[in-house]
Image (tube, rainbow, N blue to C red; front, side):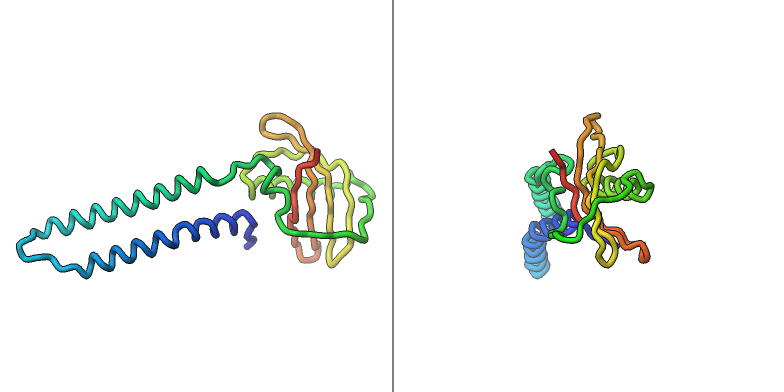
Length: 180
């Protein structure tokens, strides 16, 4: 299973927010369960107190979730989060792709757009790969300039870095950046 940068980022932030809240709930529950009920108090008050505590905890979690949703940056397609999904520095050994219209190269471009759209919850339509270069490693690194259409109908160009190892059927989107 492939875990993207955004999944790790989101789960880290959620755990940082919910960890103190969870410990507070456990402390309250523990102290409340150890409390004794005086003989002259009806048992209905215990049920009511538990209901109030559950409601309070639910509201606390709801407020934290809303604050997190509001504070999370809203990003456009490839403008903030899409700049670099992983740090990759590849310098030497690059050569131009011989036939940019090759079915395999166009398929890689289409796959890169779909993969980025899935990760960033962004609607982009693949048009074609317009240029690119490749580097032979223990597979092949590709740097593709891809023409896409945004869901608003505007066209734009993106640079996708893709690693592919054909014999193991492995593909990895390394970065997807908007090109001006």
